Length: 626
Image 1 (cartoon, rainbow, N blue to C red):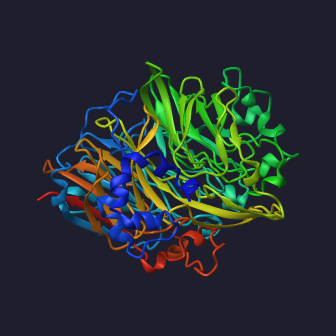
Image 2: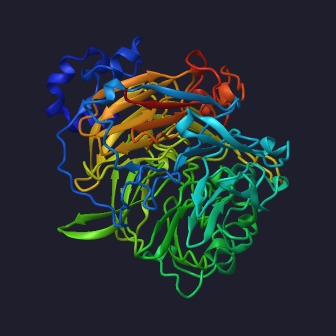
């Protein structure tokens, strides 16, 4: 039992009293989900508490003065999801109440982040991706609605629901992607379409779901479709006209990947000519995935754009020998030309569908007694990486979750020290692969607090059994080659929300959750952190201790990140969408059979009981103080 609870072991001395007083937690670590799970997570005694680290981090990119708005999905280029608003504080949050609500009328998964610009809130619905402008000062009265033309068949080639991760705003326009591969620019005041550009084709298995980022007059977007063998790309569009400025593929020749003389990867493993083609079986790179559907970051000082690429295709690694570059890779690129400056393949050969699309948080932190420009990533493999964001060097990689797949990272070579006993094999069932294909943390974004110096992570506690099977590529159809079944990891819970000290490189506090956490986090200057759960809780916890301060039972499960803003009345508000969907909520959104634990690419095994806790949704909740 002890080997399955490494975090508890490390904290045993500090937690002894709490554990003795918490039989529910002890039962959980024996692998049995408690019959009264809700009571357990709501009691301080059910949380793992540790000594708090002193605040130490600052973000390298200059934090703009807090204007009370939320103009891009991650709040800022550094991907902090931090607001300087402090009216809703650890002391006052208990008085939060619903200010107003608004239903999208859309029953699919709502993973999107709303925006607030001035007195207007902008919301993109799941497919068919309608954009709404709501009057914040009139309790969400609709100012206008923009409905793009759409291809009805698009959901048929979306691996993971009908979701959209939200719009972005810049220079009087709202930009967003559609599931059928359009990028749209809409006048923020009138709702009139400025331009619309189609970048992909559902016939090739391509879709789009990501929130764009606008950098130096360019709208940066990427495609989805790794599970259909779509070839990944990242594309920059002229924000004024919608014309393509550059495109960098995730696989193929150096010319296609935009690798040239300025490319200086830190490690030898990522150096060489045309690795995006030569590290694949002949021609395999053409349908090898490496899509780019996650979060983007930008450092104005270094003038570098950061993002990660998705999984390699097919999932069965024995069908694609080699490192399979540049799948599961972190890239730094010149935003003007798209040229790669450095790359680091986080998970060579990608045996576990460990996409590297998670967000990169840009921080300036002291390491070894001197400040460094760092890039922090909580990866699917259960390790928290710190990179030198100028060079791509791995400064540190520390475990934050139970893992059977690796034993750390060799900092000299940059290679993960994998465990061959947990490799996915063709024709063989490999058991207890931890983390599962859903990762110890998937796309759900973290938040960073300038006040506490801590990173807040919505994570998963899942393992899986996997068998590699045959896969034949047929354009526009699933290309997996694996049968997986996920289940709860050690302790019996499936989700975890925790605070991480990036300087001390350790977990500070942790809260267990019944289901995997599929939404994001929000940190505020009021020392409050917000997050939602798939079993319909919207929670506020103390940023320094993890203590539950307030919670509200929404109408449906939450898989979206919350935001905060200042209303026209000068008061602070918090908003979040409900509406379960996407991969982990397939039993609700897509009516996947809960009896088939391998359904939805193995996710059903870890969420079969979700229907007992939520129904479909699609409501925006806005909370405020009296």
